[in-house]
Length: 61
Ligand SMILES: [Zn+2]
Image (cartoon, rainbow, N blue to C red):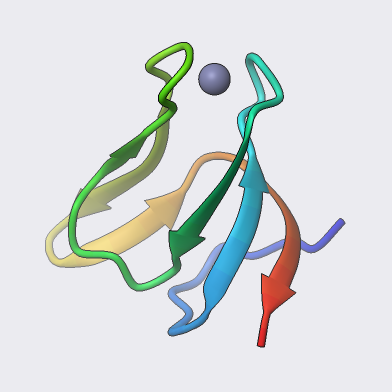
């Protein structure tokens, strides 16, 4: 498990904390990302910054 709270310009493999569905997101995404399965907000944006609300399993280099 990797803890990431800050913006990163890498792709992240995250897990939805609600339904455990895996998803690949771009850490510096400027749009919010929702879980396709349960609609949980995985990545939110505020003031041009993104915040990850899911568990990051690994960082894809
Ligand atoms: Zn989900």
